[in-house]
Length: 424
Image 1 (cartoon, rainbow, N blue to C red):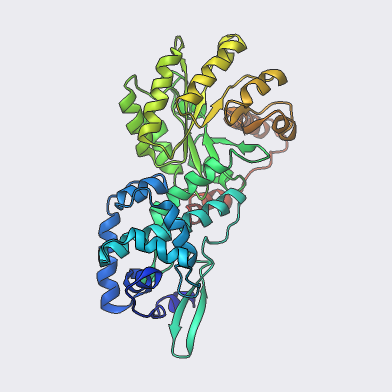
Image 2: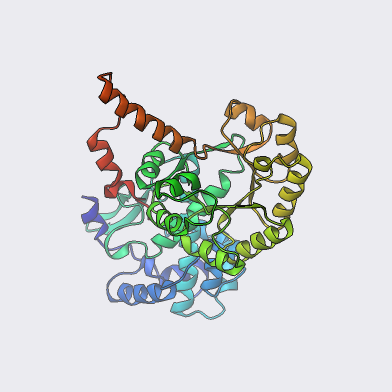
């Protein structure tokens, strides 16, 4: 029934030459018929081939750089059923020096993206499955009706949101960043293929990958920089999951900083891990800081988790802290020190930025009290899966009770369209 209602016209809005009323009267969102078709074509042309990881990047792509403060004032007054405020009118006037249909399209696109991404990011952060905008309105012979968007988060038919893909990508980036700035640590399970990622996405707010699992599954040693193709392929499989995804890129699979930056920008995921470990030791911290800065310059919206491999190599905590500080100053969004377990060492690192540690004997509450913001399972789940695989086979061979497992139908369900993001 909602599909039929969503096919009806949107309520008409009065014409105007000023402020929010002018904007409403000239955007595709509140138009019908031939006018709607013309404006939709214009809107589609404005975002065709646009790639953006943040609202700031989208604003720049729409020739509205530095406009987000004004957009935030317009958004609450944009819908026709909402009252228009003086500050919203003034914001439109500042942005619409030239009152053309194209100007309205640019502002309207950014307003809708601002509203949708903030709402969706909050839902992703809290695990709320409801659509970012719960209802829309349509005109019927008997008056205006409200239509639920439960099954169509970004609309349906002629008025479906043209910026769905962009909004979803930006919202996932916003949500993933926010998950590192909460009172309780983010629990991040690490997948090694699509099935493991999809299964974990049903129970956790975000999913990462394990470089050991990805490499070993392909018969490649971990940390040798040889699993680039596999890491990229997995990112392409997981990025449409209904939760933010972060990819372990080892040390970037290249010595060329520009090449690594382009790789990160093209993955379409919310986060990445970059480690300073190399096959034969540690990278020079100054050089690693330059790599981090280059990646953040190219992909500012992607959460860069800078892994410090000093503990793996028995290096003193003083160098660990020095490296973590350098990486944070270079733009890293988080610091990951696998192997660190001592409380005083954790506390020494936690004030430098959102700290990521591996799962250990301490509870999430105890680690959170020390300042930890993210707890990863690392390769644990992959190693456990291998162990249980062998144990299950041995149980069959030895005539013992077989272990609990997902059903055939449950695994089939992990690769159905329903596992892909309804929002994107």
